[in-house]
Amino acid sequence: MEDGEQEPLTIYRLSKIIFVGPVLIAGLGTAALWYVWTSDLYLMHNLGPMVLGLSLYESFYPTIFLVCRIATAIIAMGFATQVLVCLIRYMTTELRVFSNRVLWRTGFISRDMFTTSVREIIGVQLTQSVLGRILGFGSISISTRGDDQIVADLISGAPQASRTIMALKNNAE
Image (tube, rainbow, N blue to C red; front, side, top):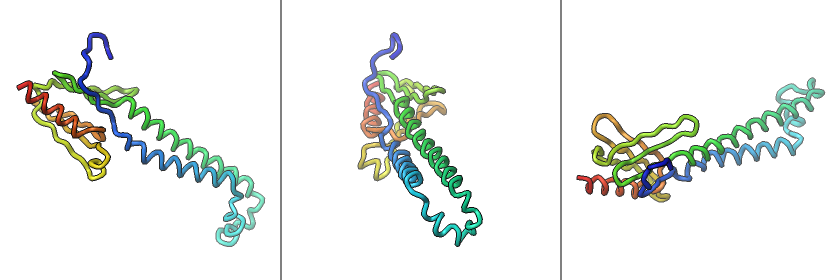
């Protein structure tokens, strides 16, 4: 929190649902890596020569194994990087609701911040899927006077956030 800044009433973060896809893909990538590193790729020995005509290249099998292992290691590291990117996104994105303003901030290297006064808010639109209703996340679109709009996707506690913002708006009028 910066010097002289008041304490927010509530802080809403991204839902942890953003981790599901990258974690599943990283798990599958790790399983593929484990399989390639621990197996002798019997498919290459048995079916490869028949289907692909690789019997002439049997001396290259160790090199092919090495290349497959390096490729799967690089792919698994890419999947792990996706999980890290999601973690950074989760830690650096938030919707802060103060008594007189709303602040949306996101970004780690390139920081995007949008602040609007509660008096400038025209309305709040809440969008939730069925899964979002079950798990308690959704998207909030805060419309302000003019063309400005805050769009906060995948916010945990989105229904409560929209009710809080609308209550502040009604009290400000």
